[in-house]
Length: 89
Image (cartoon, rainbow, N blue to C red; front, side, top):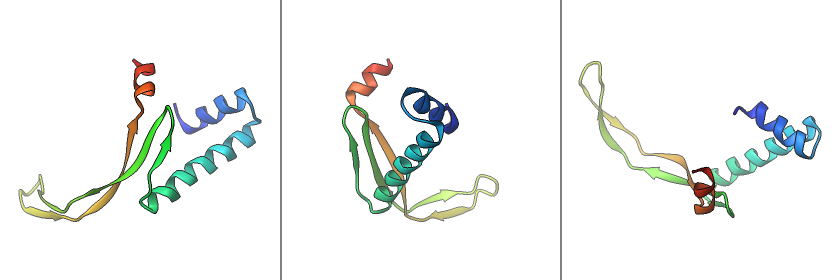
């Protein structure tokens, strides 16, 4: 399912297509802003969005075999709630 498909599903359930698109944009924007502040988002029955710090490490260029230093970075993580996991089985 793509974002446009999600907008259509939400619009069919309750809102107009324009309102549904705005609501989804706001929701995704809130998630992005919250994760940029390194905070967690708990959505009961769905899951938790968080940021994980990946430590610096040594890697290897597959083409040349040369050692490469990979910098520390932050990456988003999603952990589904137990109820959500069980509903998808």
